[in-house]
Length: 354
Image (tube, rainbow, N blue to C red; front, top):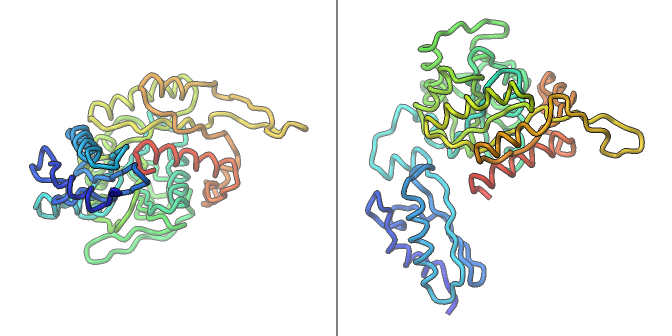
């Protein structure tokens, strides 16, 4: 007899989460079952992305499924419960982080130094994820240089409802930034404690709603904001932005060191301003000039054993798009659009969304 979803569920009722001491089905951790002939793929939702028992759960579940007749191959992939699902499962009261309870993946975009295009990467990556059908938002946590609204052409202020701040929506993205609260040209001279409090408010008291991805644009360096993010919530991971030159890469090492010390996963590196494409008659792809050197991002990725998610060209169209509030990734046929589509694909594969 052919294998069925019912049979798979039956055997998974005998597989326990080692920490919770209950079976995967009763806990509601089995999210999807795919059967293709004799091959089976099961999606299991962990209570946290860095669950220390996930390898044991994977091994036990795959072994149980393979023991079924007519199953030649069994594969378990993981997703992560939302904060709301986790609170319900564990019987805890809603936390003060209620604003992000329905956010599935919170990913920080960081850099070791300023001027490497971290905000450009954040905005265009969010657009790329949006175009793939995911619900995405951006939290501008760069309190002293909040440029997200400029790059998205946002000039209105957010509204409030029932004690919660409502994100501004642009191009389908949900966005919150101190720049929209303070007003254009108003300096934000906050010390560490105020920065920490603001980030906490933006996470817990903003009505983000259901999001697949919340990208957090961090300030450069290893100061209060990155540390606050690391301690306040369970960041799923971090993407590091750099340029190829030596001075930027030296700062990347410090930045990676910060997140590694907090036991936060590095999803990969994006090398921005990687090369300049100069038109040459008769040469379709033009001449490639490596203005800031070459291979730095790849070497850094290899040194830390993380993926190089992509290389973004030095292109004045990307700069124009940011200045005009129309991110170039909106143009699917542009080199920028294709580049960020590749970066989004690499990210999704790395965190096992696809």
